[in-house]
Amino acid sequence: METLYHLIEQYGLLIVFFNVLVEQLGAPVPAYPTLIITGALAQNGQYSAALLLALAVVAALIADYFWYLAGRRYGRQIMSRLCRISLSPDSCVRQTESIYLRWGARSLLVAKFIPGFASIASALSGTMGTRRSSFLLYDAIGSALWAGLGIFLGSLFSSAVDDLLSVLAQLGHYGMLLIGIALAAFIANKWWQRRRFRKSLEMARISVQELNNMLEEGIAPTIIDVRSPLSQQDGKIPGAVTISNQEIQTFIFDGPIEEEVVVYCACPNEASAAMVARQLMQRGYKKVRPLTGGIDAWRAAGYAIDV
Image (cartoon, rainbow, N blue to C red; front, side, top):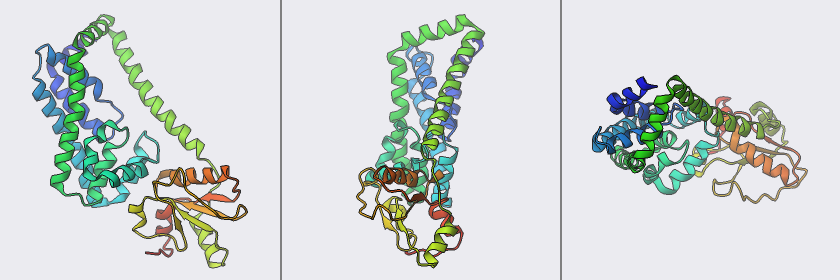
């Protein structure tokens, strides 16, 4: 533990840079503890707070610009992939679109304060064609606010942080073990939340081939599109009715109780579709199924799209 303490003292600036960089790239390694610790050391005169802030902002900008470019090149596909590797719930694409559609690039000012939002917001900025200058400006300010708060908290509670570091140093290897356990507990908690979320959405699905066969045979179920308005502009399954992201919790549906209903979205594990399907079941509908693979699977199969 004493070795780690000296590493933070001597190489804290580099540790902050790489910690912020890998966290903003999507790794489950929180950077705020590092910012708080180095903020406390800056208060004691061991670092320049301005330089510490600058390095954190540069690291965040590098990671965010990477996702911005990925969004411009690969479009919405990159956001779905981000949610698949993220430890945050799978409905993150829809939530991000909802926030971004309301506030635009200004949402980047608070993106890093919202779990699971920052990387996807950066990719969405690229996907929506946000101007590079606007993206960099708002992202830089948002990164400075986020990192600055961590550094400020460290300086504000510098004596408490110093006491904590001293206790960990005295514990030696046990101090390292405590840090490892805390990090493992953080990751395990995120994983458990995601697993519980997925389990809550387990239900029977319908394949795109089965749905297409029903439409060709004239057995048309009610099809509900629960994607965001932005995504719905790319086209929908023929005959689908839409539910916007503002209505997903309070939507009105007047179809007969005995009618078959198919719900689709464009998110990992059909998360939004399954949430709406679950709500319909709670209202008494028995024949409700999410579409496996959503609109992406429908398109990949070459079936018709209404634009």
